[in-house]
Length: 319
Ligand code: XMP
Image (cartoon, rainbow, N blue to C red):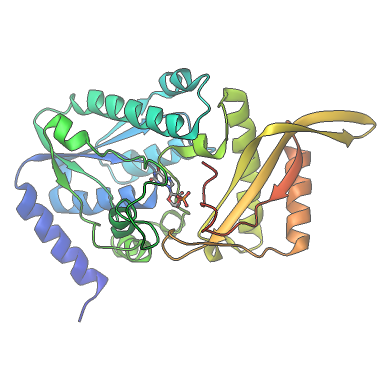
């Protein structure tokens, strides 16, 4: 009989066998997958593991601090915190095409990661939290011919470039199994239950050109939306929820003045593995209350919409 405890023990045994006494680098994104991979590998090989966390300036409110606090302070896992916000935002200035944005972020990520990884003497393995759906989604879509819908941001190509071998202990798992493994490893439920967050971060939730001002508005609106979802006890029923800031300003009234501010879209979906998704059927009361809070609490937004597109034909993210 197969249990997560047995899976964990077997995974640890395999990692030890594969890695021996070599050093391993793991890129932490703050998401569940890379976190579970890091903690699992740390259990297997201890301080032979160093994590690299690249802050590209496209994270949500408070996210960078949470990651550093959890890994460095709570788990005592050696962690390099690379604050590269200026670099990423600088290179993204004037870039509005979704694929160019993704590729720019992917390329910079690889450069930065490589730069910091070079400081770790003698590392010969790169750990990744690749899941089974990542493996198949990049090969085919909806059972059809091989089509690339979006270039996925991961460190693909990096292992060869750096002459590193890959360790991917989650390759056979689906998301719910990764969460079960995380619980088995003692990660806090608040962390394990977190919604997935894409590598390119808020960049793909801010269609068009990104600016620091737009990112700040987006972070605040997103935090209000998530707070609403938590207050109503809906967080765990939802696969992913976020706000996208639209590249359009609309006219509104506030008090006795006219406003001309951004519109945003709330997005929340249910899904099993991210490959198909349905929009979440919030009550009208919830939607109205949340829209009012966002407009009252976030300066810069005066109109809120709810995205009712399922996947397919929509994708979960806006870009
Ligand atoms: P889409 O938008 O393609 O997203 O329906 C499916 C799932 O994948 C996440 N996503 C990404 N995750 N790097 C990631 O690590 C990426 O480049 C990326 N793009 C999308 C998305 O958040 C959703 O969970």
